[in-house]
Amino acid sequence: MQKPPSQPRGVVLTAVRENEAILCKAGPRVRNTYEVRLCLYFAVLHHKEFLLAVAPDAAVDAGLESHLAAHGGRIVRGTLADHTVYIGAEDPGGAEIEGWVAGSCEDWKGVLDRTSSLWLKENLKVGRDFGGRELDRLRIECRDSSLDGANIDREPLASAVLHLIDVAMASSGRVFIQ
Image 1 (cartoon, rainbow, N blue to C red):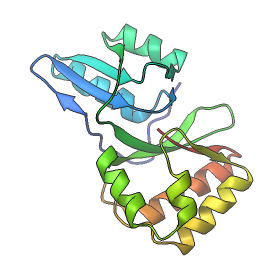
Image 2 (cartoon, rainbow, N blue to C red):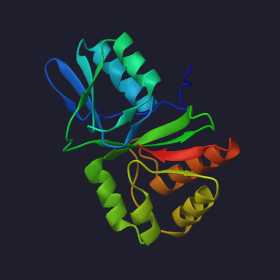
Image 3 (cartoon, one colour):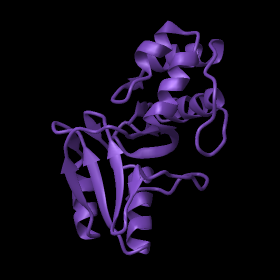
Image 4 (cartoon, helix red, strand yellow):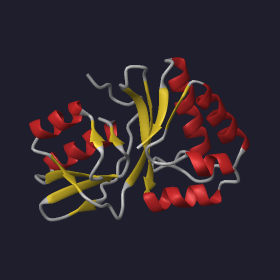
């Protein structure tokens, strides 16, 4: 059973059409996150078909596939021109604890372009996750470097990422970028 986030969070669909609500995720693994579930909820609420667009070789969590199918959503595979970036913390079993939408892929590219840390530029990529000693390094880089901007909930990125690191470390979990 997925837990709700500790506070209400915003989401952004990649595209909304007359009969479809589309969320694009570009990573090699697509987790069953609050972002995906809330986008599905909004699609159902507004009587639209929910499409989760993923890369051709992406691994989609089995629980997410069944959840989408149970609520009329479906997965489509193809080349993605745009996608959202979601950052989350998960427990050692892979269950999401908390997370938030950073923005579009262009927003995230801007964040990475502005940071002074070469390590962050190289490592804060969709598909990455951080656990153990890497979380320590991520904390140092986020604390000591300029991680400029805000997530879609208008929280400063540096403090929002640091919070997720604390959450992950408290449960011996991981921080992931999807």
